[in-house]
Image (cartoon, rainbow, N blue to C red; front, side):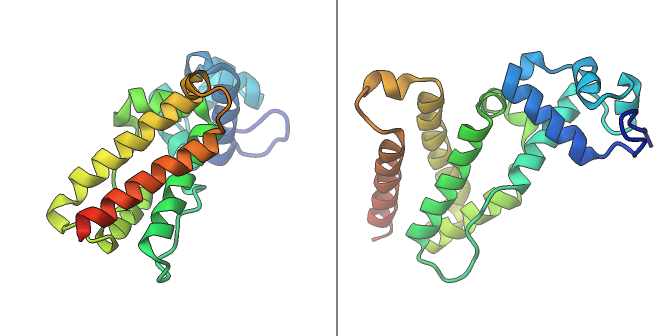
Length: 188
């Protein structure tokens, strides 16, 4: 295991991914390199290879670290509309907290697992909304893409340009209301 020169303690994957997120938040994915990461962690660049294979592995790990921090709605009997709203806001929190990583991942969807975690909760909530099992993936894909497009407009400044007097959170809530109403209408 690699040893950090600054503390004499073993380098942990948590430290690595926290540093990856800092670097990506500051300089975008293009600003991330193994050498810059090693400098940020005050370790020899070669020591990173004991933990990760390459830059793609760093980004996958950072995505996983962010996903693990999501506050997903529990399966506690809360109405599906409230759960879907909470899930949408949890997803939005990723885009707003780490816009450079979020944008990169949307352009490179192979970096993200599409099972478990958020996806499992998404399927559960859509099933509770009355979406038939055979349509879950398609409906989930449509809604995910719709919300991702809205978040792309928000993080890229398009929303502010289209409605300079508007509030992004109010606009986001209005979009989620449209989704909720459409799902409810579809189920009846």
